[in-house]
Length: 198
Ligand SMILES: [Mg+2]
Picture 1: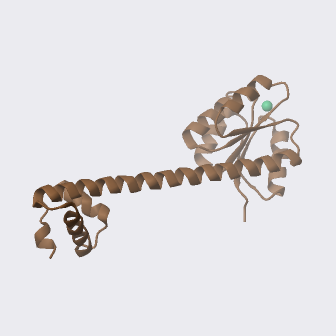
Picture 2 (picture 1 turned 180 degrees about the vertical axis):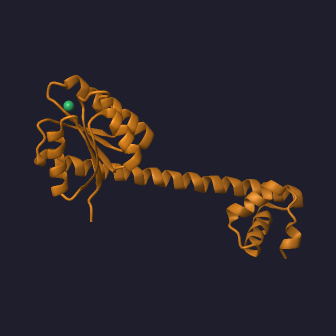
Picture 3 (picture 1 turned 90 degrees about the vertical axis):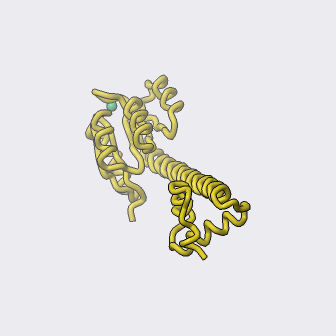
């Protein structure tokens, strides 16, 4: 099984091949390659790799600018490859989110652990984002149910618990979720609840 789908970006084809070889040997899939920032953005959109290993100094668009755009648009983590002389750029890269860096020359000993860490971090971030999305969705449903309950209380002069029971019965009788039932109640206000529930 592949350990991750990676894109390699460098304007020097020999360096790109070296990095690719190290990654493939370590069990990663190199799903795309690019030789400048523009092409990196294009390829990221098509292949959606798990991680991008990208050179900083490239023609057309440099790696830092490209990584910022890729981060913002696709949320793909980037591991930048920089020359020792590019200290200022490295500092800039550090400040950007979800971006790590390695100083050239790149060796297998540096590259593979950094790739593993970057992928691990990205996975944790994605898990957290997923949880947040789920929680937000649950909260939306809860709010909707509260609103539907309020509608039923007003329309049928019910207490809170009774309104909730009616909503549950309605959803069971119609084999729909509480979410859908609440939508229905909110949309129709004067739901023909009595004819549908016992
Ligand atoms: Mg370069």
